[in-house]
Structures are given as structure tokens and as C-alpha cells.
Amino acid sequence: MGSPSTIDTPVPVSGRTDRREVSNCTVSVILPTFNEAQNIPILVARLQDLLAELDYEIIIVDDDSPDHTWEIAAELSRQYARVLSVRRVDERGLSSAVLTGMHLARGRALVVMDADLQHDESATLDLIAPILAGEADVVVGSREADGGSYGDWNRWRRTVSWGGKQLAQRLLGTQVSDPMSGFFAVSQTRFQAVEPLVNPRGFKILLEFLARGDRPRVREVGYEFRDRLHGATKMSGSVAGSYLLALLDLVLGRMVSATFTAYALVGLIGAIVRLTGLYVLTETGFANAGLIAFELSVLTNYWLNNRFTFAPLARRGSRLLSGLVPFHLIALHGLMVQVGIAATLGDGSSGILENAWWIQLLGIGVATAGNFLGNQRITWRPSVAS
Ligand code: GDD
Ligand code: MN
Image 1 (tube, rainbow, N blue to C red):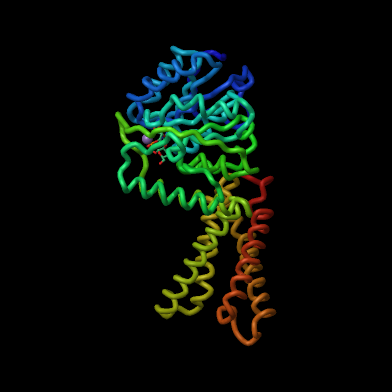
Image 2: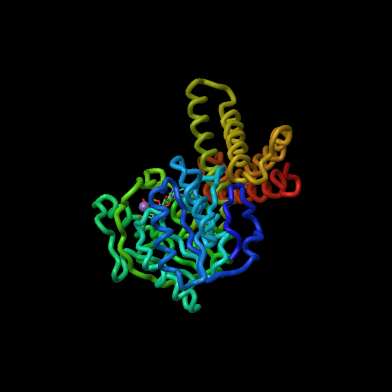
């Protein structure tokens, strides 16, 4: 094992880090923490007993918790060579914390577990066995499988969880009985194959490993969900909202890239801006309302695409201004494509808005795809990143 270590982010998490090259081990347990100061020492002690016979490592990834969980984790890592602690100061979020941990992990099997003692750690050995035997790529700790239960969850949480499960099963075509589980194991091989495709946002990291890339071989292990003794849940309405977005991304991600999905969503926002603008400006008696509304939507789209869709290649300073030129030309070209399609397929007599819905949809679809390719190749061309 490597020397006892604590890492304060930004850690060199892109590419293989030197830590990973030191030596491999059998199992890495990844514990994401946010305000788990009271729970983490108890869990680490239990895991040490449980895994004593194995070559293991425990990786705690804390997001700069106000209750100083990171300090306790750092202390544990000084005490025990098999404990690694990561304190992330620039990033937040359960899924991305898990990914940070996995990236540093050297185990053949990677286990993810809540650090609040709600997951029954004694199921860990059953989770990793099929992976170490080469029989599964993902093993899900399930509250629905034999021997599993939700503990005393209230009706509301059960209903929300049931709804999320139905959506995931229908949309992603997975048979897993508890796709919302935060307790699971993946093989190092599966992780490396899927890592470049994973969406780091949100709470539902297991879905990513189930749904991205080739279909994995999946097993389930029942476990009993326990109550929280210390601290509070971080689940919230926004977590539920981001769950829906993550599902959408997973479904679309099978057909198109996440970048295109973002681009299309921005386009939708632009369309709303354009229609609202058109309505307001016409009502208030502006001349050229159509032109101004179009320009407003182009500017909105440009800003949002720069900020989100092409964030890694974002234009800044004078390049932010100069990017408006190709973006406008491409937008105008897209408009022409749309008009062209309407003129070719429509009855010829009317403007685009009067044509059948499917002609408009086709026009929008072709124009959006074309604009996307144009902007990807010209406006946000990788080689000229600032
Ligand atoms: N590093 C980091 N950053 N850790 C986080 C963050 C974050 O932003 N948010 C939560 N955690 C940690 C918590 O400290 C805990 O160890 C674990 O992630 C789960 O968070 P909880 O807030 O306890 O989640 P929960 O119990 O409500 O939800 C559980 O059940 C869901 C299924 O219904 C989790 O297991 C979910 O993953 C699971 O989907
Ligand atoms: Mn919890």
C-alpha cells in the first residue's frame, strides 16, 4: 500500500494518477461524505473489521463539510495506511464525489456506500464476490431483493422512490429492482470503460454504470436500509429535479451526445425567448418585432451555449465578442434551411409558421442539427480554445 495520504483538491484526477500505479488491491470502498463527522469513524472501524482478511483501501471523499468531516477523515488517513482522504474544495455533489473516489481507486472491485451508516456494510462481501469471481460487472445492493427492506421509511419517501424506480426501469429498460440504490459495487474494468461517458451531476451514479456503454452483467444483493443516527439527509426537491434531468440525459445519451442534448435544450429556451419576445414586442407596437425577437433569441442561445454546452471551450474577453460573427452566420443559415424546407415541402403560398406541424418540426430538426455541427466545428472549434 502507498503511504498514508490526504489529498486536498484540486487533485490530479485526469489521467492515471501516480497513486494508482503504486499497486493494485482487491477492493476499494468509496465513502462520499458531507457532514458525517460523527458517522465516519464508526463506519471506518466497522469496515476495517469486516475487510481485515482482504487487501483493501477506504477512500473518503469529502466536499469541505462545514462540520469538518474532512479533518476527521485526514486524521484517519494519517492513522491507517489503508485509508485515503480527499477534501474537495472547488466541487460539490454526490455523483462527482463518487467519481473522484473511483478515479483514485486501485481495487479490482469498487464499492460505493453512504457514510451515514444507513447501508448495511456487512453486505459488502456479498457485493464484491461476483465481481472478484468475474461473474458480474455491477452488483446492486437492493432494498427490494430477497432479504432487503426499506426500514421505516415513510409513505412519501417510498412513493417517490417507487416513482423513480418505475421511470428508470421503463426509460432505461433495466430490470434492476432498486436502480436508485446508493449502495453498489462495480468492477474496475466496468468503471474504466464507462468513465468517459458518465454524467457527473446529480445523485444517481448507479444508473450511469447500469445504462452507459455496453450492457453490464448485473447481480443484486438484498440489504436492510437503516435509519440515520447522526446528521441529516441531503435529499431534496432539487435532487429529484436533477434526477429527472439525469434520466433524460441517459435516454438521449444512447442516441446523441450529451453536448448535443445540451445544445438542443438551449435551442428550446431560445425558441421560448423568441416567441415571448415576438408576442411582447408586437403587442407593444414595435416595428421589426420579428427581427428583434430573432436577435434576442440568438444572443440568449449564444450566451447559454458558451456558458454550458461548450463550457470547456468557452470563449472569453474579445473572443466572446468575435464569436458572435460565426454564430450569427450559422443561425441565419439555419433559418434559411428552415425556410427552404418549408418552401419545398409546404404548399408554397405561406410563410413558415403557417405550414403543417411536421414540416416545421422537420425544419427545426434539420436546422438544429446543422447549426450544432457548424458551431461545434467553427464557433467552438477545440484548437482555438482560449
Ligand atoms: N462528498 C459529498 N458531496 N458527499 C455527499 C454529498 C455531496 O454533495 N451529498 C451527500 N453526500 C453523502 C452523504 O454524506 C452520505 O454519506 C451519502 O452521500 C448519501 O447522502 P444522504 O443525504 O444520506 O442520502 P439519502 O440517505 O437521503 O439517500 C440515500 O438513498 C437514496 C435512495 O433512495 C442515498 O443512498 C442515495 O444514494 C440513494 O439514491
Ligand atoms: Mn442517507
